[in-house]
Image 1: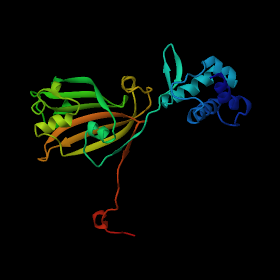
Image 2: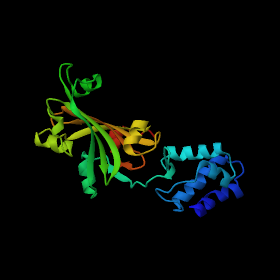
Image 3: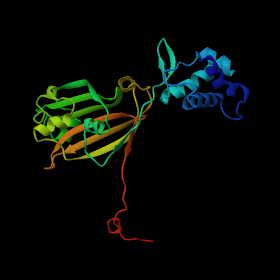
Image 4: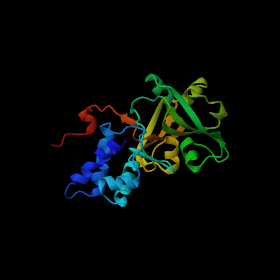
Length: 262
C-alpha cells in the first residue's frame, strides 16, 4: 500500500494543475487510483496526516477531498478504523413499464433475495394514508416496511401501506407482498409512480450501507385493482449508485399532440 500511496499523491505534489483548487486535484488523484484499480474495494487509505505529507498539502485540503469522496459513495469512513474504498455495487437496470415486485425483479436476474423487516403492524392511519387509501379515522392501516437485499447487497428501503381490511395480518407476509395479495385476489394491476432525486439521511444510509448525503432515488407508488380501487401506497428509497430506472419512449401520434403550428 505504501507504493500505491506514493503513486496516488505524487502527481499532486510534483505537477500541480494551475488554477485548480488543491482539494479537487487530490480528489481526482484518489478517484483515478480507485477507477484504475491501484486501490480496490476494502483497501484503507493512508491517514490524513500521511496523505498531507505525501501530497504536500494541508490536512484541511485532505479532509475536504476525502469528505467529497465519502459523500459521493466512493469512500467510506469507519469510526476508529479509518477511511476505506467502498465496496463496488453492481448496478441494477429496472424498466418502469411493468408492475412487478422486487422479489420478481431480482429472481429474473438470478439474484438471491432476502428482507430485513423494519415494521409489520396495524396502526391508526396518517392523514396522507387516509386520503390516498380512502380510509376513515376509525379504520386501521397495515404497514409493511422492509430493507430489500439482493446477493447480500442492501438495495432499497420499502414502506408499504394498505387498508387493514385488505391485509388484516401484516405479520403473515412472506418474502413477497404481491404474492400475499395475489392469494386473496388483491394483487394490483396498474400503478402510478412518482420519482424524485434526494440525498440519504443518516438513518437511511446506515440501513443501505452507503454514505450519508449520497444520492438516492425516491419512489412514491399508488397501486390500483382492476376495479380502479386504490390498494397500495408505497414509498421506497433506492440506492442511487445501484439502480438505473429505464423507460421506453415512442413517437406519439401527431393528432394526440395537437395541430402542427410550424
